[in-house]
Length: 172
Image 1 (tube, rainbow, N blue to C red):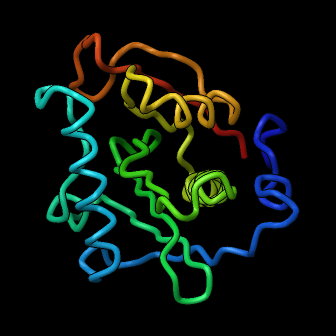
Image 2 (image 1 turned 135 degrees about the horizontal axis):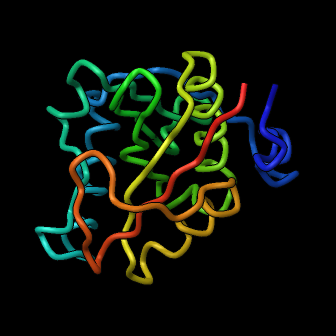
């Protein structure tokens, strides 16, 4: 059963958008690596170093991480990952859409795919940390629109004026 607060993937992207293929992938692939390098660079440009919690390539390749890419044909348009925290709780990590694909529903499609995967694996709660700066406003809007709510720091995070913590309970 899907969560009624989460739009189905068919409604998560604009009518004129292409279909995205979302699959597990290797973060070390050259095009993915470039997107992740861009992601990390932007995180350090927009947040103080001590407030950057983005995972690097090595961390994204570690056990306990599930990593997906979205492609339009063979063109990479975005990525997202989940880090297992407990058998019932996971953390959303490394959500990124290419500059060219922004505003076309890629992030919503990846998020919907991650929700489906988490439900299938019995994950009852998905949490995330994102920035408070204006740069992160589109991401925060997506997460709040998808049913996330603010929560206290989790999994070793501490209060930080540059971070907001969000969580969602997933229903089967």
